[in-house]
Image (cartoon, rainbow, N blue to C red; front, top):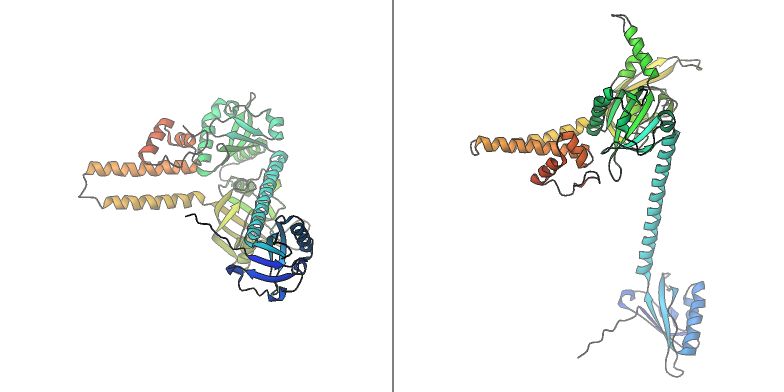
Amino acid sequence: MTRVAVIQPDIMLTLDWEGVIRNAALSETMRGEPVSEWLGRPWMETVSDIGGLQVRRMVEDARASGVSAYLQVTQRFPSGLEIPVEYTTVRLGGQAGLIAVGKNLQAVAELQSRLVAAQQAREQDYWKLREIETRSRLLFDASSEAVLVIAASTLRIVEANPAAIRELGLAPGWNFADEVAPRDRAAFRDVLLRAREQGRAPGVMMHLGTEATPWLLRASLMARNPGPVFLIQLTPATVQAQVQEMAEEQPRGVPLRGDALLEEMPDGFVVIDQGGTIRRANRAFLDLAQAGSENSVVGEKLDRWLAQPGMDATVLMQTIAQHGEVRLLPATLTGSLGTETEVEVSGAAIRAPVRGASDDQRMMGFIIRDIGRRMLASGEAAALRAALGALANDVGRVPLPAMVRSTAALVERACIERALRLAGNNRTAAADALGLSRQSLYAKLERYGLSEDREGSAEGRP
């Protein structure tokens, strides 16, 4: 016996030959809507103004050909509810009248609305990314310093800004390591290793090109498809050499000038006025802020880089106004290229004369220390200590050689995981940092079950 599934329409209207409603029936899902007021009224008056034309067309088509096409109208209920409904109209036998069958499209309309909202949100995110990319590209091209992007695996130049092409004559595709003087190549490798471990490396004097011209080189590791890259910033070493010569000429017992000492500090140092505008910044702060020169940050608001909610420049200034100083306040500093660094901020304020001002103004100085590596190391150390503590419970139950092997395996696994994390899951870079061949690293990854979900980049894949 064949079963026929009967689907009840959401709305069924019985109409006379002129399209006046004589009876109305609703499905269970719409049973709560009163429709008795529709009886005796033309169907056209129960829909939206635009829907009236669609209703007239369906009534005329049904009278002429027996059935109308499916058309969508906005049905108005006596309660004030308006929902989209898709109708078709069918002629009954003889002059008995017409019947209109409708399907509620409210769920479909909601899905369409959500789809449009999702598409708009995706479009906004896309344009935000394009804006960030355009801004980064403008900064890259407009920088007065020579800036290069080199592949972490091959050290070949991926991009070079106009200053680098003009000053150094370098072009994409060249191997940057070949441009480094032989006497500086070991130091160059150390700079890249430190950049892999810490994300950035401080300025180091390098001699580049056939004439071995001195340059101050800074390196930062950046994630990028298909693999990580190094951002190399190059500054002519003339000014740096002059500062070093002045330091060497100082007689013993005579302290160096404060500016020179601040410039050599490993922690960032920045001076702002009472309006939050930067007046002085050392090289370490420029590295944290990913700025090319001091001129690019002087005159800018500190909030441009230190804008974490609850811990921005305004909060620091208010704290100094209340307590006279700040000590080891945690914050997040965002570089011009988008890199976020966990830092600790300490500072104080003094009254100092300012050029062009009649009275002394309040100046605030802050020491900004990068604690990102410390936080990462402390978390890893705690996990390793917990694992070793659990292993110590086996003393007396497991032979000593077996415990030594297990301990070595725990330490080796922790070192491999840290190297992969610092290298952005690039296996080639992690193997270089560990002093292993790629084949040896792959074997250890398989041994410790770390091979899954750690494909890294194209250069790091087998």
